[in-house]
Length: 175
Image 1 (spheres, rainbow, N blue to C red):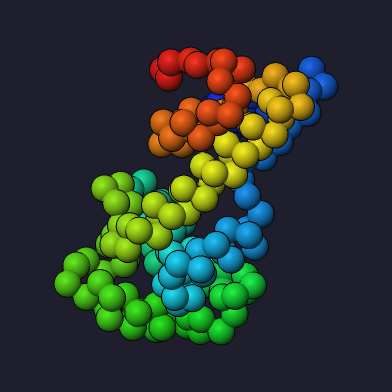
Image 2: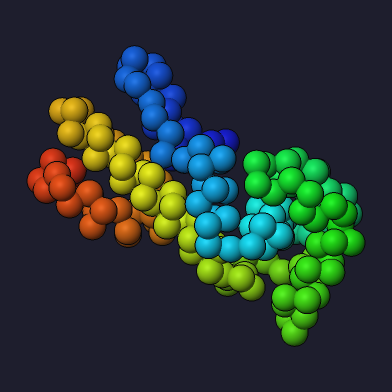
């Protein structure tokens, strides 16, 4: 629990008991494709590149923000459909200034209270919720018993998404 949280504890228990595990995370290629259907490639790239930085900022700013982001810029702009976007940290600066110039610099922007361009976060979460609900519905439809471990923002949206199988998904209280 200390290192991997509830999901890690559930996964360890399932492995120990020989219970199959399924990821509720969609394939990255599918998620990016869906995001590109709604948003320009450079904004999608900016979202994926800066998400780890902005998420971690509430726990402390890295000594070298540009160096921290560079690794994610290099790998995540290699996702299908995002190739050629954000060729440098300077390109991140330029896009951020153009689209969010009235607010804080990205180096000082934590996701703790939401991010500029929140519609991308909302869409990504919705895609993950849809995938999670589909995995649960498919497994329940096959007669499987399902235990799902997820963050609270996803838990709130999933019960309505699995309506095709009322009564088969047990409800539980968080906390």
